[in-house]
Image 1 (cartoon, each protein chain N blue to C red):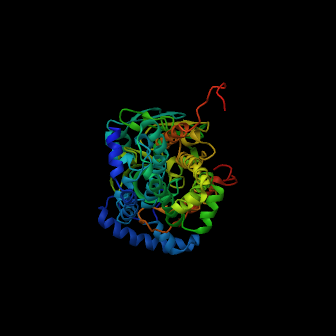
Image 2 (cartoon, chains in turn brown, green):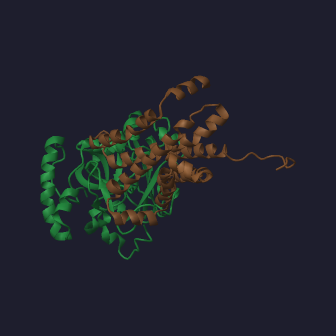
Image 3 (spheres, chains in turn red, cyan):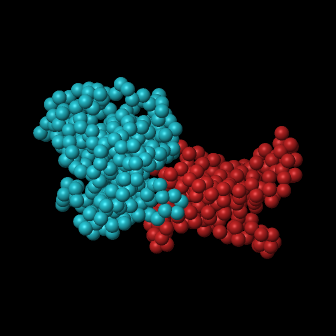
Length: 200
Length: 302
């Protein structure tokens, strides 16, 4: 089963993942214009982009554990998934600022005054350098620093999860499930405790 | 007591939705001209604010957590609810406590049409042509005793028909409350219809409170119990998060929700590129209700 999936993954070109990943963005926007997202298309589009961004971030977070624990190798898609999630976060942010809040001063006030928005913006700020250094040249130039820098994904995803829990009214099921998945994926990365006797 | 408040537009109760809308927009525009002089607001803003939303919009976008937290969950799930027979228990400090059958209540009440702004605490809004009767008439029927100061309301608790009640997003049953003078105010109604049709389940069938100058969550749906009391009753959202939702919850652009601004709102129905509109104090009913809160610090009693 895993072998077969690995074979398929080897055959699937990364551009196909970019293509499949990008299609929902303009499609949802068009649905919003066309009235297919319900009577409050601004909120619907904002939420769709935000949720897709979080889902993609979680998929990105799952790639390493999937290889380590299941032997499923999707490493070659990790950059595509990461970049896609960045662009969905950006789209989410733009819909919020331009179509929902609408005025720059109010956008700025919200970022400063509303903790769940501050947290969302912080998550976006953490993703920005990652998107900018996702090209081959940066990987070569930064060397070992690149791996270190890209560990920023972990706090970024966490902030995304908190942002979601915090923005809804009351304790709702969906955001809590997202957070549980994020936390378990991060937990898998914690270094295993070794017996003290083992030499360093 | 019925008919103590006249719509900005005067119209008959039952008008088919189509002709209703075209005439309504026209009249709303004219009403706007009249009102603008009183409140000093730009005519266009008033006229725009009074254009009724469509039946489709009003019945497909609802917060009714008993049927799920998504805006479309109530429209999807509310068909499970049976609303007949329906009994409203009226108890507490009243002369004639008892279980009142919905039909018996309807037989005694005068149904009017009220075109009200509806402003959700989440900063979206609609304009809804309700049909209903003044809550004051119902309370008078039961006979309010002199010591009563507050009115408590309760929504039906029936998890087998209200799947959201199987989750713990709120403590069930949903409860709300008003001060007695708020409850007796001519603007406060029990709605039983929209656009002249029986109120759909997702909007709170068969009868719900409508308090147009307060955030939508105060207007409790599918009411099964009304209790007159001398103590401020607990209210669901206040119990869930007292810092964010007060007992009064009057629409007020000057007092922000801790997590978002209340200064403006998105009018439902404007599409993806609609401009936000400024929120009006007491949701535009300042002339009618501001005196209820004379001398109160509204940022403290939010």
